[in-house]
Image 1 (cartoon, rainbow, N blue to C red):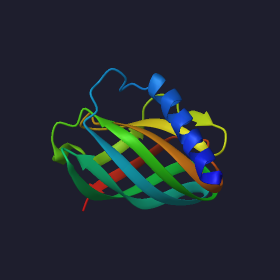
Image 2 (image 1 turned 60 degrees about the vertical axis):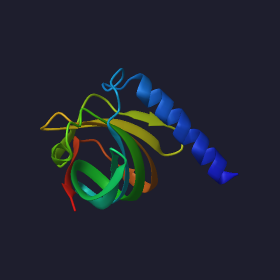
Image 3 (image 1 turned 180 degrees about the vertical axis):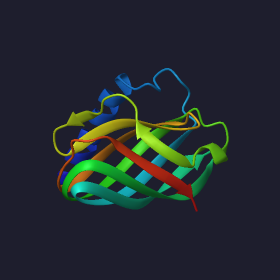
Image 4 (image 1 turned 90 degrees about the vertical axis):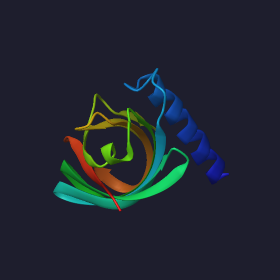
Length: 144
């Protein structure tokens, strides 16, 4: 029962988020899955790993982030769609939030991130734990 409710919430969040995404109308170039852990007391840090699916292959990467205004501890599982990726080397870099995020009940959230090479990632996630964030978000991706 819980798993089906979670899947329904993730599907609803994805559909809502894709309707307002800057990547809308573009052909997706890949997908990502990310697992993050975060902790903060005014200034928050997060770390984790992920996998990029691009041109039929899987590429592991590490991810580190910084957020202002974080209070608490949490874990997140995020999935997303990648746009404007011309080659694998363009995926690594510093990503910053583009536009406003979308929040859905049950710990669901969506956000669009973009790096300095123009690669766009539409992310939606499920967060577990208690964490409050009021500042800008960003992260750095490094291919392994």
